[in-house]
Length: 196
Ligand SMILES: CC(C)(COP(=O)(O)OP(=O)(O)OC[C@H]1O[C@@H](n2cnc3c(N)ncnc32)[C@H](O)[C@@H]1OP(=O)(O)O)[C@@H](O)C(=O)NCCC(=O)NCCS
Image 1 (spheres, protein in one colour):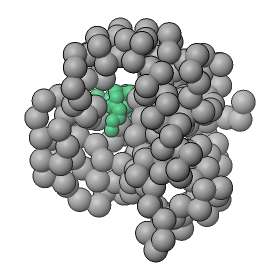
Image 2 (tube, rainbow, N blue to C red; image 1 turned 180 degrees about the vertical axis):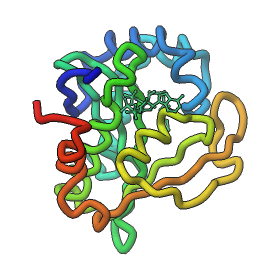
Image 3 (cartoon, rainbow, N blue to C red; image 1 turned 60 degrees about the horizontal axis):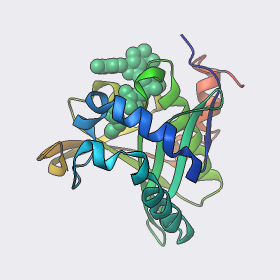
Image 4 (cartoon, rainbow, N blue to C red; image 1 turned 90 degrees about the vertical axis):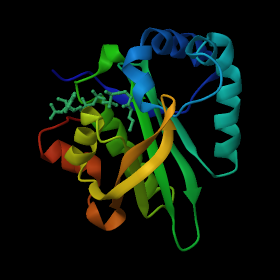
C-alpha cells in the first residue's frame, strides 16, 4: 500500500522528540544496519542527544561536506536520509545513507526518498556519482537500491563496524548518466510512485 506523501526537508532542532521516540522504539529494526558508536542505544538516541547530532549535521552541511535530510510522510517525521562524505574536484561523489521508521516501512518511502535525493544531488548539488554500502543480509535496503537502478560494484570485506563487529558490505552506485531524465520521473513512469 502506498505510504502517503513523501518529502525531504532539512533537520530541525524541534525534530528531537519524534526522532528519539522512533529510534528508541525501533532499536531492533535499526541496530543491525547502523555503524557502532559509543554509549548505549538509549543514551545515543535519547531526546537530549538530538541537539548535538542536529548541530553536527548542520555544521557538515554548512561546510559543503554533507546534505542531511529528514524524511516525512504526510508531514510527519518518518526517518532520515543523509548524503555524506561529499568529495568535489574530479570525483564529485558522495555516499547516501537512510533509515525509515518501522511504522512507515514497505510503502515505498525509502525508494521515493532516495530517488528525490539522487535527483537533487545530480541536478542541484553538482555531484556525478552516489554510492551506498549495504550489508549483504539487508534484503530490504538492497531491494530499494535495485528498484532505483543502483548497480553492484563490489564487496567490501570487513568494511564497517556495525552492531559490534567489522561487517562485509556490498557497494552499489549510480551516476548521472544512468538517469538522464531523473529517478523520480522514472519511478512515476514505472508506476512505482505518483506525484503528491
Ligand atoms: C531499508 C529500509 C530503509 C527500507 O525502507 P522502506 O520504506 O520499507 O523501503 P521501500 O518500501 O521503498 O522498499 C522496500 C522493498 O524491500 C522489500 N523488502 C522488505 N523486506 C525485505 C527483505 N527482508 N528482503 C528482501 N526484500 C525486502 C519490500 O517488499 C520492498 O520491495 P517492493 O517494493 O518490491 O515490494 C528500512 O527497512 C529501514 O530503515 N531499515 C533499517 C535501517 C536500514 O537498513 N538502513 C539502510 C542501511 S544500508
